[in-house]
Amino acid sequence: MNYPNYDELPPQLKQILDPSKPKNIAMVARGVAPLPPATLISAWCYLERSGEPEMLAAAKKSLDEYPDKMMLPVLQTELPSWVLYHLGLRFLIKDEFLEFILLNDFSPDEIFLEAAAVCSEKMTILISNNQERIIQSPELVKILEKNPQNLKSNTDRLKHFLHLAGIQIPGEQMAVGDAPTPAMKAAIETATSENEAESESTEDADAADLKKISEIGTALNEEQKQSLLQFISKLNIGGRMKIAMKGNKEVRQILIRDSNKIVSMAVLKSPRITDNEICHYSALRNVSDDVIRAIGGNPTWSKVYQVKYNLCFHPKTPLQQSMVFLKFLNMRDLGKLAKERNIPGPLRKAAKELLAVKRK
Image 1 (cartoon, one colour):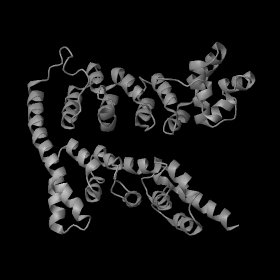
Image 2 (cartoon, rainbow, N blue to C red; image 1 turned 180 degrees about the horizontal axis):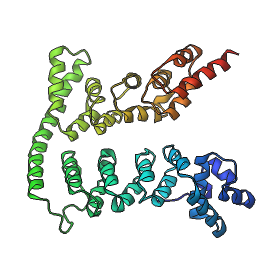
Image 3 (tube, rainbow, N blue to C red; image 1 turned 180 degrees about the vertical axis):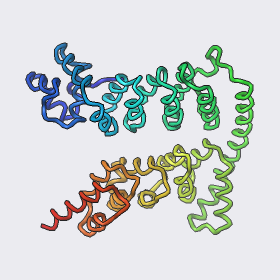
Image 4 (cartoon, one colour; image 1 turned 120 degrees about the vertical axis):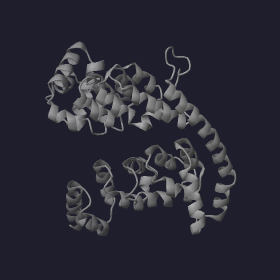
């Protein structure tokens, strides 16, 4: 993991860690500077890694003595990836803290690789259930296998999942003593034959079924819709991911609700997706939290007023995102939001306060 040098720090951290102001740095290191918790902890992580010996020792002491009940909420916020990595190394054997770090969307893949090698059985299960991370870093499977706390069923399941998705585990064929069990061999052979058949089916569909549907547009009759649903239902994860990227609007409309978040997230990566579709998806209640979070985190999509509006009213939108979009709503929509019961209380309160300010 690459740690930033001083010039690469965010503006707020550069200001409080300015080398020309050693007294300020000393106050930060000792934890007596009046700063938000996330900023203070980020500064300590930087000093513990890059500070002068005296400042390093003070920052380490501050981190060691920081109250648990105050640390846990910070671990759930948007922190720089290098800060989450640094804290993850500190808490590799403290499940209560490590869990929050591994569940934080801003945590880098590197901390998953570090944790997978030494973490508890509970954390190995948490890592193996994060299919998106497994796809991004399939080497996690090999690292988990070497962890004595890992359940063999976890990694067998992951191997099967990756094989179905058409993803190679690095070094799987060359690793000594890594031969699959008879049951796993049977699963792989079955998956291989299914994949070959489904791959042909997918290509045929891309060339015929999907092309035909694209030519018809979105005005599909019931028979056509049923045929499309049946076609999709026969695909494995890899097949669904493929047509999520290559299919037309009707295909995306179905797969954005897929129960597997890897598939639904693939829809958002389609080069054919439009702003109107994003507006529609941002209002759907039966999509995964990850889809809503990804839409809100995309600077292009979140420029659209209707997307901001939909996300403010969506119960799955992270509060931090909603609070940002709230500022862009007009008075009429702020009034609606202030009365909405399906959103977090703090957001509703903020809407009331902002509405009162705008009315003055």
